[in-house]
Length: 206
Image 1 (cartoon, rainbow, N blue to C red):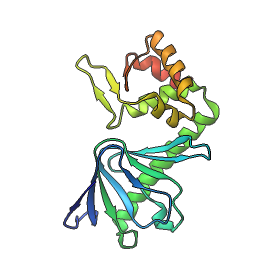
Image 2: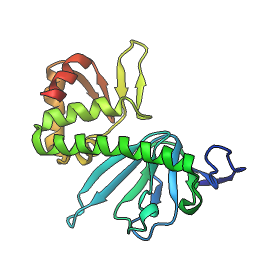
Image 3: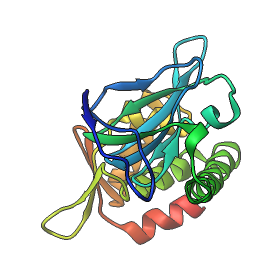
């Protein structure tokens, strides 16, 4: 983690910008203090059950916020972890301008919408549909890239996919293998190529 002091930004008045390496834990459950805005990279919010199984709550992309409990004063009940090299801006929630509050509210509304969609998938979709939807979403983050042949590539392990779709690695590995045999994706060590995006979208919506 590297702390970079910055001059107050006229638009956002961030106090500091902090740089995190992949795997760095930014927040632990506990008392909230600051509001955070992702400048670049990707942040994962996750929790664990009593058996130690992890569950991804949501990914936070550039321009989006986390630590919103600092606005209400509620206790934080999740971890925030840098998935990639990331820069995060810190804000004092007590000094936000009306413009900042509007930006925060709009970003929070978008995050809630994605959260509702995720809950719907977990409650009403088959595992292969949830995996397909997750791969499509990750392709549009810092974990995604475009290969020389034009295909989308997602850097994610089966453990990470399992935490994101509410399953276990063994079951996710089985479904990923089935999707690979069908020619929809091509799975390698820690990375998955989206070979047939239209077919993957059909599975995600099925």
